[in-house]
Length: 62
Image (tube, rainbow, N blue to C red; front, side):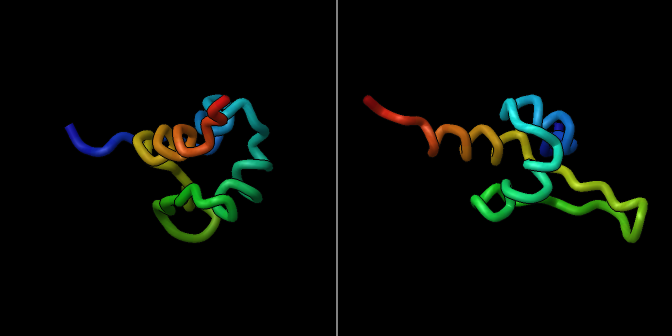
């Protein structure tokens, strides 16, 4: 099986953030989006493994 991706809504739910936040802030914070298609029909998705690694990097240790 190939690389698995999450769409923006799934990513937002996984991160417990809003969809606009994922579009606006996540790429600026280092979460790399992948664009599939062109123009208005383009879909932005994130690799599941990238999202999980990104979250792990932000874990606060006490």
